[in-house]
Length: 181
Image (cartoon, rainbow, N blue to C red; front, side, top):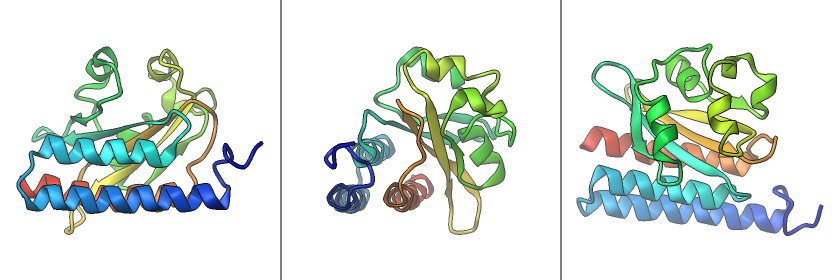
């Protein structure tokens, strides 16, 4: 694999780290100046996609007052897909976002076909060309899970350590955003 396409190359890692840091700073400025929740969450998702590279698509799902996952910001997922997963109940045995919301832990699925948690849902992301995903919970300071920050990949892989750290930092900003509004 050429270094410029290698997700683990040192120069690419550095660039991705900068993307996550810049996105975090931009989203915090947006939050401080009164930007809408949707605008801030969309900024975070877009930065996560750039930071992940390789055609990754990110999504923030938020828990509603009934405890169900709803779309918070998913600008690059089709409406049909979002409708299909709307009102998903947190469940440690379902997908990555529902499992992360239920457990409060990061959940990784590098290959939908090899993970039983995706048995009933794998057809949805696979129809869009995705092979795997991972999700980290969005957690308030008091430990309450507010939602999830998920990333879909078009190849079987785990997120890099820089992606994990970067998305966790962005998830912290998402938590501030959800608590503030």
